[in-house]
Length: 610
Image 1 (cartoon, rainbow, N blue to C red):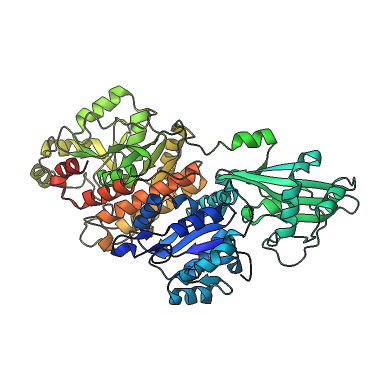
Image 2: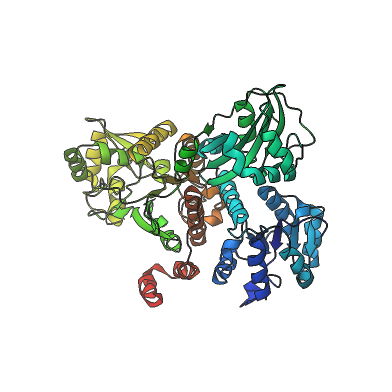
């Protein structure tokens, strides 16, 4: 092999296993399973680039008991060359240190075209390559290198959810611990390895022997130190070294592991040392300057570092399911079975039909504020006076502490009008894209009668028009104010995962200007999430892109998209937790089948498959 292999990139069909997954059963190849396990225990990292259905392929890997030994899996139907190029960039590895295994010579040629010097091989070459791979690296029985790449994977996945990189860095809770003097003596082997093997972030490139290091440690004219880093995704360990010649105030060593690339650790360390003289040797991945001190990085003591490693853990006891409250329109109920395929306990709070046979949405932020701030007597008065509210409109699970994460769709804020009571100034939401104070009471009452609504007769409508004024849809500024209020009222350790709205034209929906309204409100939501603590965005615009992706309006998606949405939610929760959720392929398969069964017979069908 021309250069040491640090990562093996596997194709799946007729490479990692025998057969094609999309065409039926596949046969596990024990020699490949053994090769992955044995080389992972020597620090070689394994990933996947395969043309397949992600869920089906992942389920098979879980079945084989090998899923946890792969990081950054790229399983889709896209061309492999560009994917491998992006994958290596994400993993911060060079193409010459990667080996791509694929039975298709066209795929291998394409991969090398996009990734010059990439090592490639046909799986039939593995009997000759396997002994060389097993002899590579060095013993790593604790899979520490694999864990470092899992940490990097979590970090990269989380970074992708942010439009503002600075917001991501500030949410990452980057903590640095500096050790000097005797505190670093036990790390001699790691220090020597980092200095002699690092290139991308080795600013001085002065190679040394252990003997030279030991002697230099004793020199009073040289200030040696190590840099340890952790953030909400995990502990990166010892990732940096510096040696400052005190006589000349010049850095003789400034070296970092590429694990912390793009976190600002190099610049922060340079600033912390007081911007000493530095003669950069050769090419480096980061350009340092003598002015910036990244404000998202915090220096901690060893004791504080140990404590802060627990910041990203969920609030439930170890081994229990994370309790998630799903709040929004009733169509979000289609997420529940897919979310339950993960290790989650899902509670629901959706719109419902009240005692007057009228659908009631209880997720509008204005109504949430009334449920918390309005005296019970006033709530009861409004519930009795307004048939479209009803007696349960102010009841919510938000304040009972029964959940540990909130998944919230605020699309009623995008949709409903607010009506202000003239005598009290209280505003209540109702309807959508219609001013009820401007309609003809007789004609509107007839429409409500056809829908079997009780209490929405002509007399009520005339009284409503006299007592309430339509103030229109909530403004983006008011929306953000209400979201800030909600964030402040919920425990700070409870994350909120917001679902935004699609931005497409829906012919015949009757909601004029809905696309523009969604765009405006999405911007407000983006701004809020970017600035708020412990808030995250699930962007439906990534997969709801055309009129064919929705049904009768902009808020109701085709059934297949709810599985995608559930997977996005689960991934976001994993990033927040800093660890993967358990997943049942059987429960996911059952949920997919159930989503295709007509609602009238779904209950009976679910009893059959339980």
